Image 1: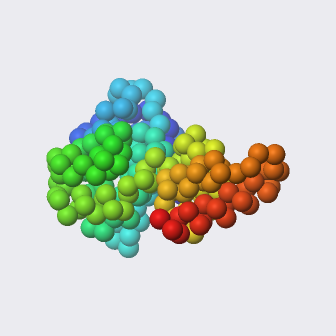
Image 2 (image 1 turned 60 degrees about the vertical axis):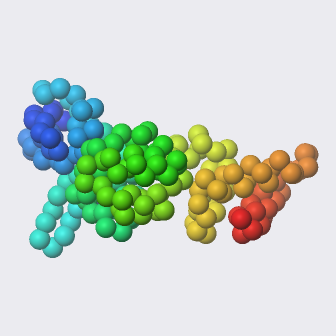
Image 3 (image 1 turned 180 degrees about the vertical axis):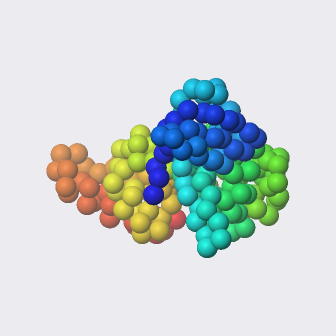
Length: 198
């Protein structure tokens, strides 16, 4: 519904930012780490948003950039984490630190985030390892030369990082001099074989 809101920052609290735009002042809940990245009061800022809508509640959540919003949406898929919990988690750990902790399966680092217990940290590792570095289309293209094939494999239920690795391995075994369309078909087929056997 709303992708982002740009306007004058009128107030910054621990987990809330107020932005004035077109005569409307928006109240937006942000992680503390994202609030720290916002411009000073009176300056113009942009917040990427997500609207939470229930029968008895409407609340606008915001993020410093698209990657943080996508991470928030991924956190919502983890059992036991709601919007409030996801904001608290993101407020207690930076993006790079979170990605490193998930990739390294560093339970200790995740448990150090305020309000995050061992069980939820374990669920986060199971659900999110290998996913956060692929959150935006630009990130996918930068991280792998096989963006479309990775997405097709992800649509079949394979992990994106594993799919990229399988495609890279398949390409190493291909003969040179084949056409682009044939190469893509062979890569896709070989990657499925590789992923199915792992």
